[in-house]
Length: 137
View 1 (cartoon, rainbow, N blue to C red):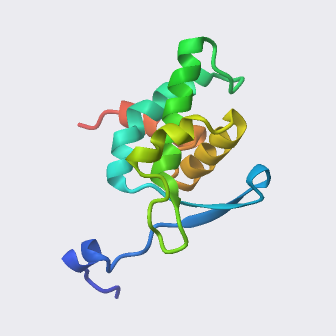
View 2 (cartoon, rainbow, N blue to C red; view 1 turned 30 degrees about the vertical axis):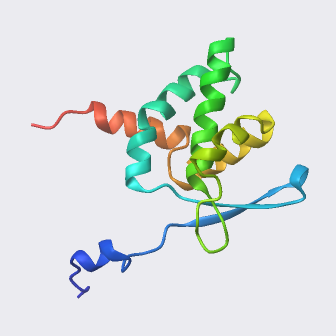
C-alpha cells in the first residue's frame, strides 16, 4: 500500500520540479531549465496555443506582429524556467528586456526545451486540446 499524503507535499515535501541542462555553444556554457509549475503553466496556456498557431508548420512567424508575439512569449517562458544551480530564478522582471535581445535561435531553443520539459510541446498541446474538447456527461 502506498502512503497517504496531505498538505506536507505542498510545503516542499513533494517531488522537485524536473531540471535539464541545455548547452548553449554561443555562450560557451550551459543553461539550467526547470519544468514550469502549475501556476506558470496556467499563465502560459493561452500563449502557447497562440504561439503554435503563429508559428505554424514551418516554425517561423508569418508577420512582424507574429515575430514580436513569438519573441515575447519565448522570453517569458525562458524567464520562468531558467534557474541557477541552487534553483533560484536567473532572470527577474527587471532583466526581462535583456532576454528580448537574445538571438532568436537561442531564445527559441531554450523556450522549446522548457516547454518540452514542462509537457507543453506541440504534441502535448494537441493532446491537451483534444482532451479539453471532449465533453463528459
